[in-house]
Image (cartoon, rainbow, N blue to C red; front, side, top):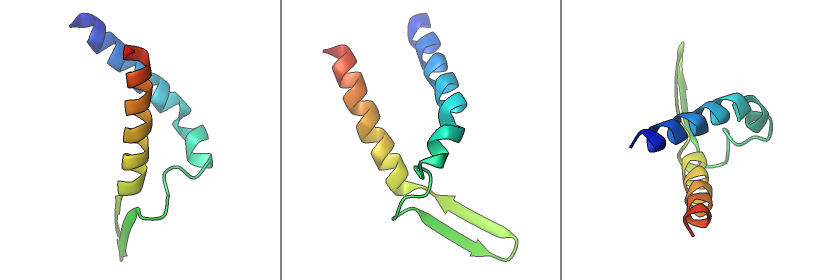
Length: 66
C-alpha cells in the first residue's frame, strides 16, 4: 500500500512540474472543453482534456502492468 501511495505522489509531482510545458501545447484548452464566463466569474470544465488524459494514462498503466 505504501508503494502505491509513493508512486502516485511521484506521478502527481512530475505532472505538476511538467504542467506549464504541457499547457503550451494547448492540452488544457481542447475543442469540447466547457467554459462559461459571466462578469467576474469563470467556470471551466475540461471534459475533452480529461478524456484524453484518461486514455493516455490507461494505456501507459496497461503497458506497465503487462
